[in-house]
Length: 47
Image 1 (cartoon, rainbow, N blue to C red):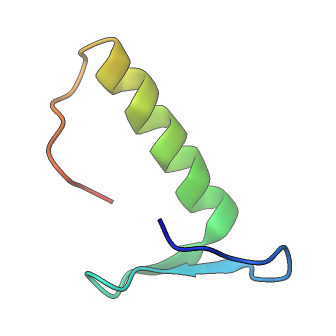
Image 2 (image 1 turned 45 degrees about the vertical axis):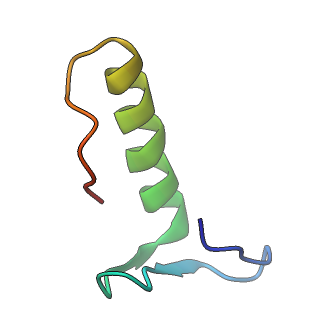
C-alpha cells in the first residue's frame, strides 16, 4: 500500500513504476479481491 492524502489523485507504484488515477487503481484492486474471494482468479501479483 502507498499512503496518500485526499489531494493525491494519482497512484505511483514504487515497485513497477505504474502511474494511474487512484480511483481507477482502487476499483481494480477491489475487483481483484472480489474475484480472488470467489476463486475466479489466482492470487499472483498483478496491478
